[in-house]
Length: 271
Image (cartoon, helix red, strand yellow):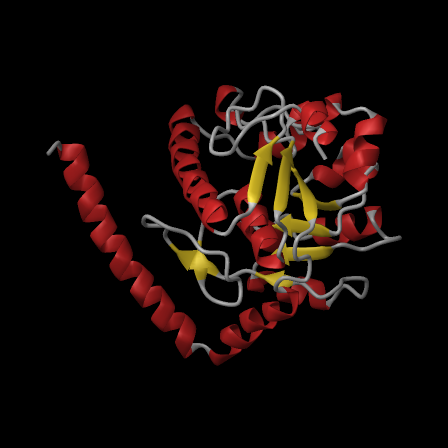
């Protein structure tokens, strides 16, 4: 056994203990349990339907209006700063995922910005319970899915958002798990280029200069982050398979290999 295997085994023992403690603390918090159990109103409400999850990779800018029309015929998930992009203004997200700590901190205004862009049809937010006070102060906000994800994935993840779930460190991962909870049986990914470690965070479907300039990360950070999130995507892919959910990556040139990769046109023609 190599020293790397030894480290992994020791880490897994510690993480399992950590997860037990996390569940105990969750169960001791009546308020938190009430908030998260409220997600049950969303469980399987889209049973058997198809959805698109739009990341914010630069490949989204290659989508033509005819393709976006097809996307809009289905339920759309938006994430992060999608609303700032050309594509973001041509789609109508039913759900919008904001799960980074920044969104209930220095970027808390993003909730209001999203609602302003989509004021004719405000999306349901998928976010952390720590953002409740922000949405409570926003009269246009709909009921939200509040995801409490405090456990570390060790060999598995789950999609029961009415409980304390596993943190997956990636907004697309969170959106896929939410889509499974909502009952979708076909989940298609667009704009998931998955290559920010090659560009040190630069390169989105919108002008990202201001965002990236605020937070400078090293190559080591990106490689570690991508290693972890990729392992978690593999666990999500296995969960989806077990539940009979099809997850397909339609992003051209994407480096994310956890899910089958197809071209947009080939996929649509098979419907």
